[in-house]
Image (tube, rainbow, N blue to C red):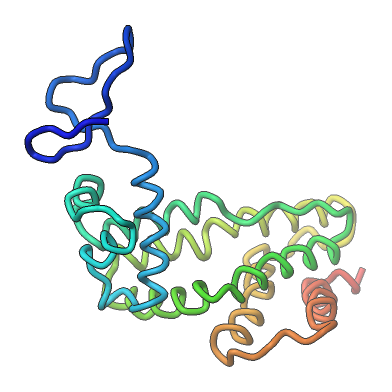
Length: 213
């Protein structure tokens, strides 16, 4: 690894390797990963409004130029990180029963929402989204659209098994899955007692019509 006269990151090419165009900076993946991790830590510590490129760079152990070389503002940095989370999405369970699928999704969602960073970051970003249409759109993708496909697949399998009527609303399923957990863990900030997720899974299945067939 070498630096040019302006302090840009350049990888020293191996013999026979294809050279990058002259003057083109090679962005190191380890620095990019460190910056992404620092964004979450900084958001949890100070919130979006007080977060700064300087603070992110300091926490990541890089210079400000390393951040600006990748993202032109803190908004675009957060948008990119949020989009990456959306791409990961929730797992698509296939336990063989609707109640089992719901229970597994609830467990994964509860674990994510109980994480100290998530409990600080999500409410803060939702409040900030009211002032930023770009952030609002990214959060909609991360917190709703990416999970909607999982809920739709779960409902479709339940319909195929004869557990649900064909006209069931998969969006309602997603609301029923996430609403109670968000309220309990991020709004009321209460614990999830033993047996709560089992009871909630049964209630969601019943609300969707699983016990009316």
